[in-house]
Image 1 (spheres, one colour):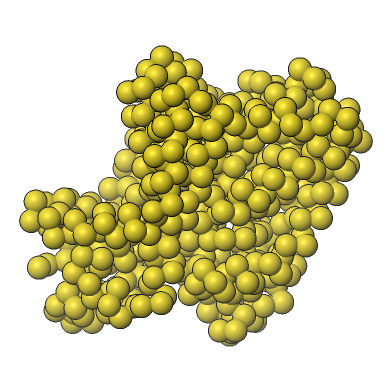
Image 2 (cartoon, helix red, strand yellow; image 1 turned 30 degrees about the vertical axis):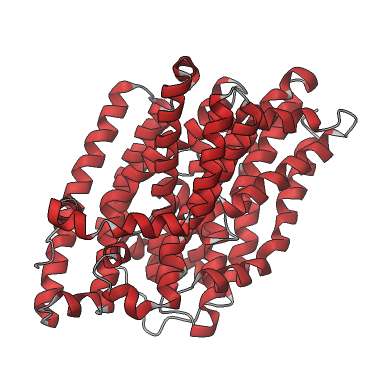
Length: 504
């Protein structure tokens, strides 16, 4: 069987009747890896259909957390434990070239939840506030950011020449607010991947993840934990871009600064002289991306969403064609004649994963944003119970710290966008009790918790997948080294304390 020339052809071939029948065992395999999620989902169906919304909210959160972690294990755990048969297995081999498993699991759970709502309580569908604009925004910006990735390596060369290794990590992390966090993970990993010793790879990988997770938080368009609740922050809390920079910028930039300092000590000096020969082209491409982001700041509406869709579709097809040509050229150069040779070739495997990510990841993220809104809507009754259980006698700062840590803990295990969508309900419910200014502090705590919490486990934040693959860090080593950064949460706690002095 010939290898598909593009990721699109790869997807089409997967669902041909003959191939689909042969690969049907994938579904059984994924069920086994996520059995806890399926039991939780059955419990959700029972409680939701019987109008017990508090319990259904609890179990839909459990379903999402277990599914997004369970499906991710197909690549992050099994591939490292039994790589020989994993790569050669006629059914499971297809999964080795697909990433974003956790994100696809979230989309799957959201779609099933929507079906359950429609079949049992269709009137609830009208209460879901679909983040259509945010989904198009994410699709357009992240698609174009995928186009800029390789040019950003040249930009990082200039940064290192004038700001050193620290500047690469710190400024690269802050630029993730423009390029998108996954794109920043790719260009920082490509730039620094060969600049670290094998024993320090997990330390540098988790440090980059922690820095990017915070660095992308000063703008709403590239950080899913903020983008998914941007409608709530702007409409219910009255935040503008300036408010976001004032309220969130302090903590996320300082935290990225601290973690970047820690990352710098693991980076080796460059072997040769830094060159900037392709800088004009790189700056032009990055300039277009900056203009796109500025357009979303000053213009928002269906016409811009249409532009986002056009950009996303065009970039996806262009990258699919480019990577298809690269795959064919690699096969020709290395004389890989059989499927077995291709599956066992590391360069071919790595390029195939990049092709899938560049082509489909922005679209998957856009759908994930919609799915997490459905899950978050169903989870609201349970979260409101949590909000009501918080003693009113607690000082405002203590309540904010509680929200920060509980959001962070959930972010450790689930995608941090889900955590922010779920717990922003708590801050919103307090607005009538404590006033708008104090409620802003609680909203800040939720966003801080989501940004900070996304570094501990690989499925906790989207950039972690790309970083873990680039640095060859499995789930166990990732978590072990990520705990070394846990103390940096005091930066956000201090930022909350400072904010509490002005928001009362």
